[in-house]
Image (cartoon, rainbow, N blue to C red; front, side, top):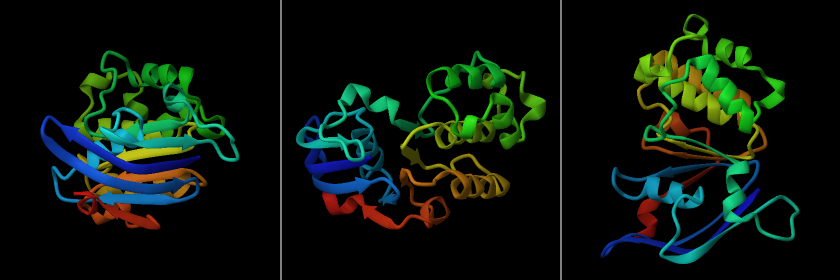
Amino acid sequence: MRIEVEEVAKRFRLEWILRRVNLELETGRSYAISGPNGSGKSTLLKILAGHLTPSRGKITFWNDNAQTPIPRDQLYRHLCYAAPYVELIEEYTLREALRFHQGFKPFLDQMTPSDIIDLLAFQKSANKNVRDFSSGMRQRLKLVLALCSEADFIILDEPTTNLDSQGVEWYRGLIDRFRRDRLLIVASNVDVDFDFCEEKVNVQEFK
């Protein structure tokens, strides 16, 4: 996948959050997006995910070797997104949540819900409702759904939020194992979240 961002700007009411964003992002690369809290990191991610429409400029999504762009309403087929503000279906048990997710986005390498539960080390919580998970358990679930699904474009916003030191180490292991040959974007101000990224973008450049 390749994403072309041309002169993109975003305004909320009278305030310009971002101006003149020009980026080219491609498969096989990892990109870190940094900047102070409230500087527009999450806004930029939502634009890149097709969830927000720019106030100015344009963004084009391309399949590798494709001659025509990916329609915005089809981008979800290529994308997985994990963020503290992305909600899970709390009424499901863990096993039900994984089966539901697998129904519209298969897991990599023909992994099964049981394989994902083992990867999470949540064997004792397989039949527990997600609403009863701790914040750290929920964050692990969001990350594994994003990184272990068949998608060529992954966005992670503040991925180690609510994770303890063991959880952070688990996240880095997940990155090492599953980021292969995909377009990965990580937004954060915490080095351990993104210090493996080859390219860094500071949103302060777009003010």
